[in-house]
Length: 102
Image (cartoon, rainbow, N blue to C red):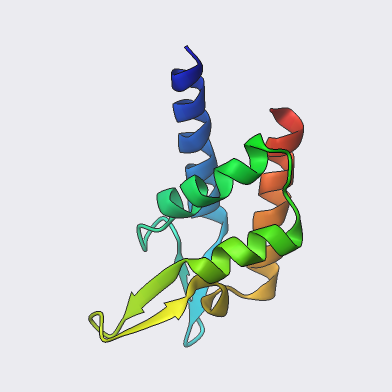
């Protein structure tokens, strides 16, 4: 039963991240769900929720560790470099909400 709850929680978290957080590329907003990154981001950040250690610093470290391939894979950039500050704040807010509710 716990696995189902974890799976459901991860799916809900990924969906909310995917709909709320975007990469800003040449003033285009590419939402993480459209870039197929929302599930990966949720999976990497979920341990912060379960360990009750969501903080801006911890979230930024995780975002720094996720690389995004660009130019057909010729280059990679840390996800943190593609997210506007407001999206970073939104992401931390989402994670804090899930941490409170869990």
